[in-house]
Amino acid sequence: MKLKLALIASSFIVTGEAATANTRLLVNCFWPASHFACSEVLPNWIEEVERVTKGRVTGIIPPKSVAPPPEQLAAVEEGIVDISVMFNGFFGDDVQGSRVAMNPFVGIHDAETMSRALWAANQKYFPDEITSVQLLSQFVISPGELYSLTDTPINSIDDMASRKMWVLPGPLTAITKKLNSGVVSTPAVESNEIISRGVVDGHLGLDPQAVQSFQLLPYTESTTKFANPIYSSSFSVFANKDKWDEISAEDQAAIMSVSGDVLGAAFGARWDAAAAQSEAAYSDAGLEVVEADPDFEQALNEASAFVTEDWIKRAKETGINAQGALGFYRSQLEGGTK
Image (cartoon, rainbow, N blue to C red):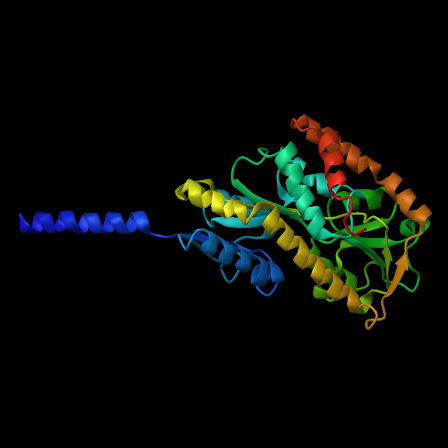
């Protein structure tokens, strides 16, 4: 009898501990550990989660990504990690709303404002399009830009057509091919291998901090700045549904209070700061900054219109009011830094 009572008491103790145990989230970051997304933004968010849940929910970031960038969604769905970040272009064709920010010439030179605008558009026009995971936030990074590797800046459609370009995969590759440029398209992390070997004489799609971090400044002679940037990349932060369901409704609400546009803006602001710091290094590296000829910007804008038209068609097919979402996103950028 004493043994039986002891076992019952022990079971109550274990059950009580389980009931009050913290939920620990494994938060993956696919960038290198030294990248500010992994070393600053996500750790700061984890601290905020711990603060608003009074320590009931904690988090940890693995020292190395558990999966390559395109496989972040699968890693979360399968429970390999609890939370991760992924480029929105890696979602399937049934996820189109989050790509509204990646249409050409819709953005501004202000990633923080674009990030807030994307989350606002998500909540209004496509809050339920991502269903296999729990969406926590979305954000936009500083715009990708156009660079010349020769002494002649790229400042006309003819200049573009005469070049062989390294181009970020996706819409920018389609646009550049339409202009009859020679195109080498690889993931951003492979850009140095192509550019440093002299395979191309221009590149398109990397933001300033990427140009610096991928050590491309020694090979780059000039950049052409558009009044409205040609392209920006957007990302999503999401959680495993089963893990999310383990968290109380009270703590879920608390976590969302520091996620959504708050976390998105934190990512955007940090990217803005990194872009500004990298641009400050241009002069020491001898990189010339050229203002785009308005005629060139207009011609490139018109030449890239097919990308937006295609997105509108695809988004409509998923049930999204595409024109409404695009117009709303643009309206949210008014007053931001041009």
